[in-house]
Length: 76
Image 1: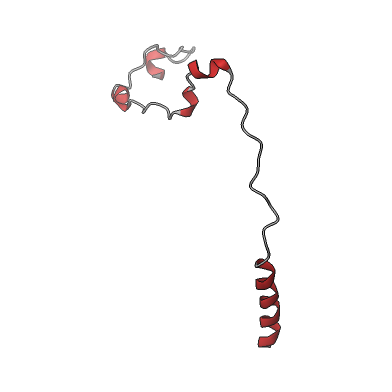
Image 2: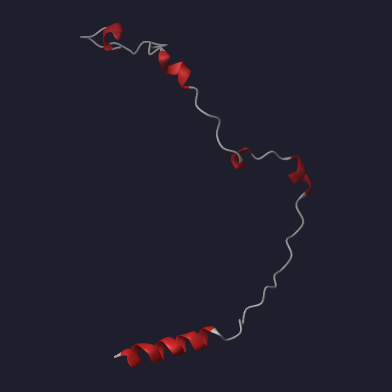
């Protein structure tokens, strides 16, 4: 039973010792466009932190529209 596990393990280990057929060659990067140096990319930075101090007052800036049975102040 142990030989059944040992033989495939040795074959796999021998296969891993072969040389790497891949080369670390690649095409060089193309030059950047001329306007790229002056462009500010806002998506590269995280969003500004949210100011939760604005939520201390939950009063409505504009009251919602009322209906036939409820005034706008009652809805709010």
